[in-house]
Length: 271
Picture 1: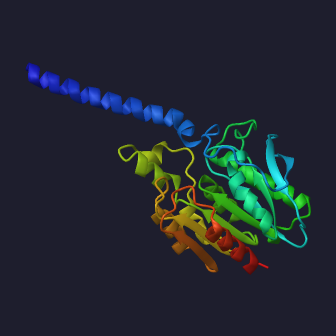
Picture 2 (picture 1 turned 90 degrees about the vertical axis):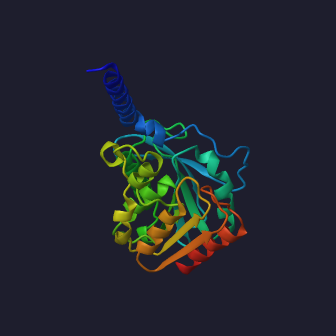
Picture 3 (picture 1 turned 180 degrees about the vertical axis):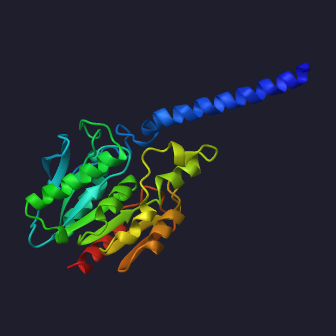
């Protein structure tokens, strides 16, 4: 074999080796790429709504922090809010401050591994956290029919999972994705994402199983979860369904008067 052929073989072997090493690294460290508990998206927001810090214990004995605001559980619906893959409960203050002006109770749950909670986030772990929060609300006297499931970004995957074949009052999905497989292919197109991925969150396979009224919200300028994914989730969903699609919003939607009114209107249609 001449030197040129040997050199070309060396280059090919090197490329293959680097590819395999990167693939292995992605597999090993994928949850570190997916979940970002210490990332902050907002700073300095002040709570203007009264909340009670409560503890929700999962079936595998992890205590989860949640913020609970109760007006009247018999008279008003209760939002169970599932946040996204980054940050703490404090990063959602700018959102829940608006809930005080609605006829609504709400509870904002922090995932395992987030907001000082023990444990490490996984797909099945977050499903367990969510179901534990539903069980906690029911133990407080809130019926399933009076719970509105609200998922934000990654939380939409959890919301879609636990809302299947249930009689929740409603479901709100903010910036939803079709599946983590689809998102993985967008960000890592040259890797076998479907084979590598541990946490798949396949919402598009489950959305048809939702029987509750649905509100899908998504910004067309979303640079993290493409708008077409939210649109596809909406198109696949059963009626009754509503959408709030905006021209300029990015992934973190602008909690302006229009969005607040849309949520408030949706809630009032459930009464």
